[in-house]
Image 1 (cartoon, rainbow, N blue to C red):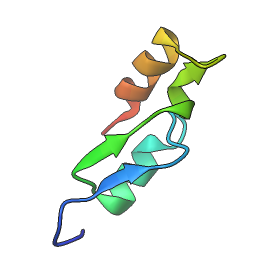
Image 2: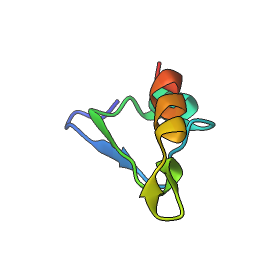
Image 3: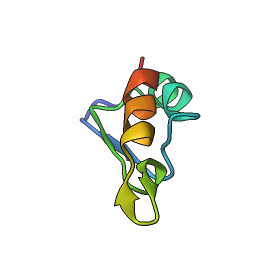
Length: 54
């Protein structure tokens, strides 16, 4: 865990966010491409993403 607050970003999606959060223990998450389909936010991907966060 970092002594300063960090945001974790880059390729986060439902399939990998739990492992990433457990390893890094970030202050926050920056998500984009992992929750989009055809450039638009995908409600199903968002739901799965947030359900996967420990």
